[in-house]
Image (tube, rainbow, N blue to C red):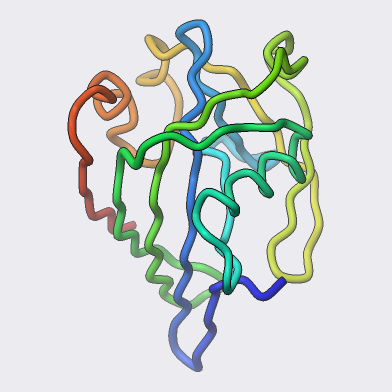
Length: 161
């Protein structure tokens, strides 16, 4: 698949979607092994693929979960360094729901598979209690506040690292 991920001589552009999966007052987050920073699961949108198709594919590939995609909750403009270049990322965050009684709910932590460009690696998935989000390093930094207001309209934020 051709991800919507462009490299120029000086910059990188990334179009990503992420899923907000909440079960039993816990949210599913991911982080690379040997890293303390958590993020919401998802991935790069491929050309010709809808955001919902991307989320269903990513959750299936990474953790074997069948999901349904709900409403758009957050729109993010993100600026951060990636491979020694500035990256401009657009990330759309959607509510997602497990379609079946998936076994991933029974684990506090488990390992999934990730692929970015030509690299494959393991990634940790954790169920984090929503009331403990302030105690971890997470992106977006306002995740705890945003999670407390999921019943509100779409939120837009800009993040510069």
